[in-house]
Image (cartoon, rainbow, N blue to C red):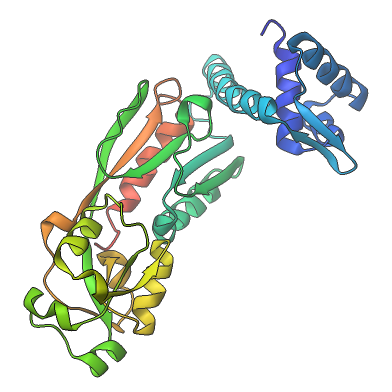
Length: 292
């Protein structure tokens, strides 16, 4: 790219979705925005946007440009901040991603962090797919499982995610509480519908409980929690989450082999930016109070 103005214009159009919105952010006339978009599309030989009555929607190429431009703008803003002596400036967008099951812990932290930095726009992305930090899809990722090994990422151990086997009081009243693993064959279980899940507790359940006793299967942890609460069976839940509901009973002592690790992942190009470092420090401090 030899014309950053055009890239920056395309980035703002992708963010705002309209020419007028991008023009307002950039402080230019809408005709300038259109001219920049036409010029960069002609230079690249690809369409970056689909035009329609409601505005501009990025094409696949436009999405690629958006991710790269986001990371580039973050680095430019950090450079400008240092040059102007504003090393403590936290503004722009902060994009954090994690499994949706961590939302009850992460959302309050993001909310209070944003209140401390009113110029900050928070985007919290959840889902099963890995958002790619090298393409600027996120600034900070909280990931579970084995240590991420993508090149150019900075990986830090975060915390241990403790899980336990729980049943609702209603289930215990109907079926009793198992005395131990030897009683599992006469009980009902809730689990993931993914029989290839690599989560340690999921593997343990598949190896320990007869398949016909896993009678309620779900696609995500939120549904598993609701099924356990409804009395559908015994299921795994994060211990910090189960501790919030007095209706849940831990049926056997937890095994360390069920536990998994959480990791903080950032891209090397943005890891040292004030925005990322400020959030990481705040998140680590707040997580000390998370109930395991």
